[in-house]
Length: 196
Image (cartoon, rainbow, N blue to C red):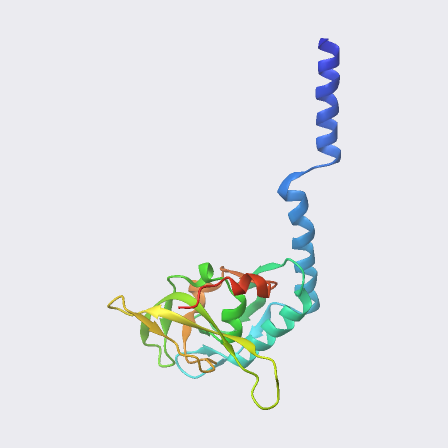
């Protein structure tokens, strides 16, 4: 009996070494996939600035996000903003574009200070809001857009509004650079977001 027990234990140890299980072995292929996509897209992309205070150019931010979303569609890929962008200035305000809001989870932005183009603090990011818009004259189907809400200094909820955000609202690069940016979030997951 003791010999059989030792054989069983030895077999289990060998199997664990030969066929490692758990999250580590499953996460590695996804990380390698994300890394290969980042290399293919030549990320991190250089971020030039405009104006004072220095603001990252919203067009470059949206271009990188759009290209990344196309590459990772239907896969599981998670990267930090630091892995996507390399700013040319240390003190930088980063735009909260509609495209960025669509792909970054609320948890990554929650509580981050929000600024206007002049660098004035408006409040703290509260949540993303999703809404539908009809296609209009040239398209029969509708589409989904995003904006966000923030809490002002009195703790009141303010809306960024449903216009194109571009670089109307900004956050400090230092506050978000290490936050997770999930590029492959499905529309089904986004549909569960609350609309306030």
